[in-house]
Every structure is written in structure tokens, then in C-alpha cells.
Image (cartoon, rainbow, N blue to C red; front, side):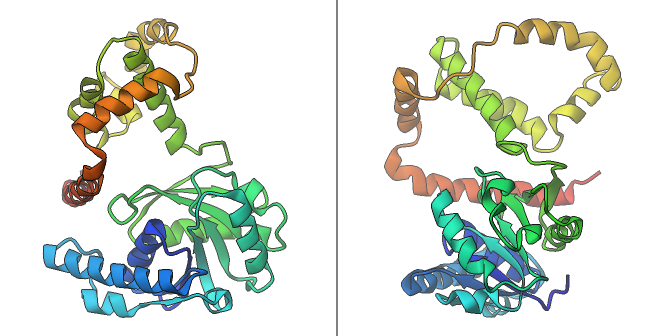
Length: 314
């Protein structure tokens, strides 16, 4: 896909803004759309501020100057302007099925046959989103990790009827703009990232509920333990390195792993007194009014980690 192509961003929230910045960093012309004109204006102002700040801090992506990246991004509240002649549309509106279906119906009547319609959804299966579309063979999910500008992973998930060329083009495009795409061979609820994330959160919840560890210490297990390894090596390659290969790891530990896993409790519903207890402990660590500052700290930390990973590849 040529970088001269027009990229459309459907939705001007935090994820949409981040996608716009990512595509502009690779030299693409971007049109960001929202139904409310004032929100588009606000998004463009924020994007400009973010890019200029990144340039000042030395954290901007791509080789183009910040001012040039800003100039590549424009906005509109007219759907036809963002859809017509777009080569790729990335939808980023709120996670409400009714809103997405309404938007897709409106896009469906004006989209070109060559345009890919991609969703940022983390919740809905691509088949559920696209089943009633005339252009459903052009539909795919490209699920980013928040914040996408600093975390490169994108889960690329086809519907059963997605054209194979759409899948391959999307994977190629994600690599071109500096993201790290993973291909799911078929759709599954939660995709890959959330299935793994939910398994971790469920066991954290159970350990707190059973009084084994408090919130601060269980998060420390990840930040000062597993997370440090997993930032560079996934759990499977970690196991591979922690023995003389994965087969050896299995022969050593499969029985003990199985015995531990048999003690796991049923899947919890993350609610009730334990959820209140966890929330209370978290609010002591990071008060609600400090969340914006902590998010900025998180994003800067992720940026530094991302740079370290790029400079530390084996």
C-alpha cells in the first residue's frame, strides 16, 4: 500500500488520535472524522500539541519533522469526505455495538471496493460487526494496545469471510507504520491479548480474595518479576530459556504445573467485596485525582522501554 494513500480515522478519541499520529509518522495523509465538529477541532489541537511535545522530548516517531506530520493530518465531520477515496479506514468509536453497526451501515453505501474497513474493537468479534455489510469481505479487526503510539502490538483478526488479500495488506501496512502485528488465524472471543490478560487478572483477584497477598505485592510480582522478563521474551520463549529448550522444560515442570493449576479456583466474577477491597487499596497507591499524572508517567515509561527494545534487539 502506497504511503500516498489517504487513511481515514473514524472517531477522534484517544485511540483515534493515536492512530492518526502513527499513520502520519509514516508519511500517510490522514483524515480524522467525528460526528461533532468541535470534537474534531479539539482532536487536531491535541494531536499538534502531542507531536510538538514528542519532538521536543526526542520521542517522536518516524523521520519527518513534527510540523510536517501535523500538516499531514486534517479533520472533518462529513463522513463522505473521510470514506471516499480512502485506502484504509480505522474505526475507533466507543465500544457499543449499536453505534458501530450504525456507522458501518453508513460507510457501507459509500465505501470503495478497494478500501479496507478496520476496527479497533477489543470486545466484538469481526463476524458480529460485519455480518450484515455488503463490503464484509473488506472488513477486518486491527486491535491496538492502549496507548498505541507507545505500545506497538496490533492484533489482526479476520472474519470468516474476510478476503485473504485484505488480511495480508493489513499485516503489511501495520509493519510499514512501525506497529508489531500478530495474525490470528481465526476469530476467538477476547482475541489473544485479552484472553491472556483476563487469565492473569482472574488469578490476581483470587489471590487477593483468599488473603494470600495484598494489591501492592501482587502487582509487584509482575512489575519486578514476570513483567521484566516478558517485556523482552514471551512466556513460551522464557520457558524455552529456563531449561534446555521447551521439551526439557515440559519434562521438568509439566507435572508440577498441572498439580498447581488443579488448585485454581473457578473463574471469578470481578465484582463484590473483593473488587471494592482492591479498588480501595489501588486508590491509596494512586488516588483517582492522580490518574492523569500516572498515565503520563506510564506513557513516558512505555516510550523509553520501546526505544530500549529497538536498540537491544538480538
